[in-house]
Image 1 (cartoon, rainbow, N blue to C red):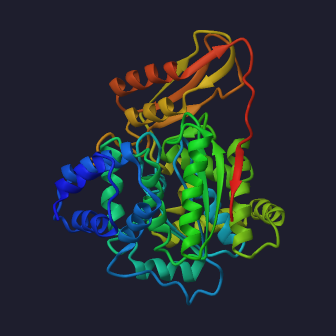
Image 2 (spheres, one colour; image 1 turned 45 degrees about the horizontal axis):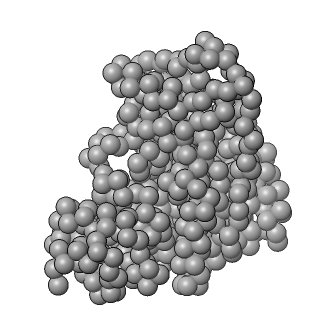
Image 3 (cartoon, rainbow, N blue to C red; image 1 turned 120 degrees about the vertical axis):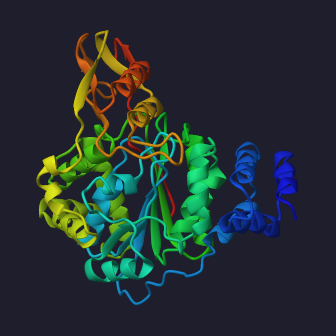
Length: 435
């Protein structure tokens, strides 16, 4: 069997057998097949798609690991959440402590910045000392002690995805629904969870731009989870503009803490309550989603969720004083307002361009080898429907390098459309698929 023959087969619209998919996946993981050949295969998959049988075979191959995580000795239900990626999407930092404070065990294996979207690990690592590289034994220990841990992929958890994830980011193959599904579900099904809540983004700032495509991806993942006996629910949620107001790693940590304190932007707070409600319900800590929503709000109002976040940060080696004193978080040398040239209402924001502007500043990766600057980012002042006067700031850039800021400012201006009237706003949660 040769990789080049399988690349050609998929390029020409053929269907790969489980053995062929296993050969490619495990061969790449072992280092026997080079980046450039798998990059070509990924592009062929992006263009040609995958059948259900191919997808199932890919998930199974990507789940293979030298050691499976076993959390069966932990008595409470294990529930994780995963987002398909959006701009300003820091919900994991908020809902993990909410659900854990409510008694759900939350084993969260997260990713890094991908394309124009941020990564949970990069956000957490902007907290001084926070260690996302726990071993599986350490991960299990922390979960047993405090009910929540947030880590990246280890060599034992879906090692194929660990390599493919970075390569997809660098080869413009992120948007493929079967590759997204395989990446997410191979990680999540390796976690020994009982249930999974998926936040599938749709809109200009998402990888799936249309609701139809987002629902298709949601259905693929729910179906994949059910096939192996897991409870899975997918919420299709809007990403036509950044979620909240902060885009960038340490800036998003600050906004997450603000929500856990009972404040923060309404759209971010409402979505976190909805996702937490489903986690609490599937974790059998509430008899209904509505009761789960009330419990999630109670975790914030009582301060228990914020205390849990402090506990998580301390237990994973971070300096939790930074959650009280934001000056301990990374910050930039410079700030610049990006000014509106017109008056009216914000009729459109291209969320992807806002995300790419943050990548230009250094908040994400243009190549898989790039280092993220944890301090840089964007604060969004004007969102959809907001009134704006000529000369008012649309956003504020937090930056360290002026040339990067120039390029980012130009992209931000391209992303905004100001008109005489407000657009009709769609609901934040578009559809619920499953459980």
